Image (cartoon, rainbow, N blue to C red; front, side, top):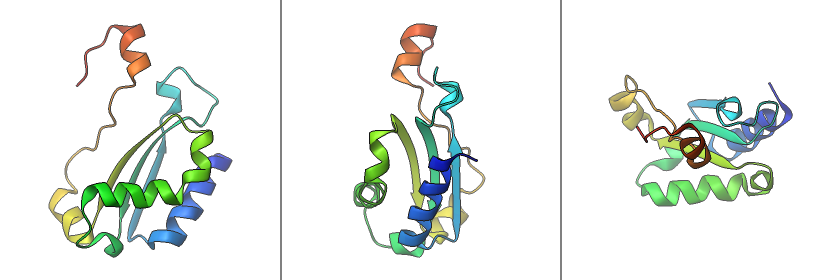
Length: 109
């Protein structure tokens, strides 16, 4: 695990006390091997109860704001424990990188 992974883990754990936290460094999929530029983050927390999705995203970006100077993209899935139980069998795919689409001629999923 990289220093950025550990920093994100620490910040998100302290802020949201998640029942589940999953952070995936997807940088190797985006022409940036060896760099910490693309992450997928799934957080399951009671803190998100009755908070609209856009506000949940704002909360996370506020928490990791200092890290965003180094990070190009973050894919977020932010759920309450009840929402997680309803969705835990689904696959949470990150969106394709715009740069990757243009260079690989791939269509968005």
